[in-house]
Length: 170
Image (cartoon, rainbow, N blue to C red; front, side, top):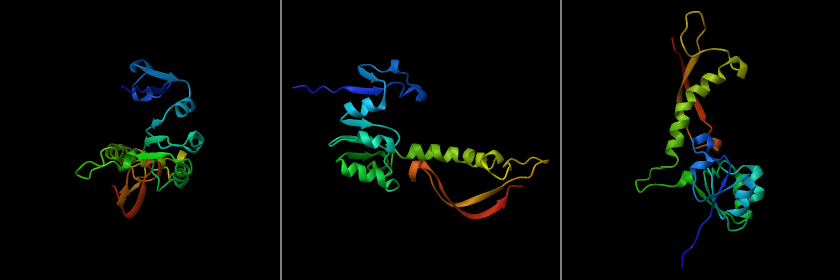
């Protein structure tokens, strides 16, 4: 006996990652995420389900994604209430204890954090309007040394930063 599996993909889901719909074979492409949720017993996502997606959960469905359950108690409650199995990418470990699905996301967050920090220093983001780079004619920003940075481990891959001390860059 052969078991057949059908793959359902939301139209355009891979576009921003460089995977146009035409790169998939033997896949049913549907117009909305709702249609994917309604037809799939196993839903594979990158981002944790958002509140507006909770209504699509159904009994015995399996969701394979980043879940961040400790940081999103409403998601935890909905999964339990609707008897949905959640498999969290961030909890999958290799034999050596490493977290192969979390590590690349943490690396990305780590590489982007200086850019994000520089951006929030800009006055149009209600920052102090300073610049990290040393320009003679401009006031410079202070760079904070960080006691702890949790990248990729907090809700929505946000950062928790604790200031240890501040030093002038110049």
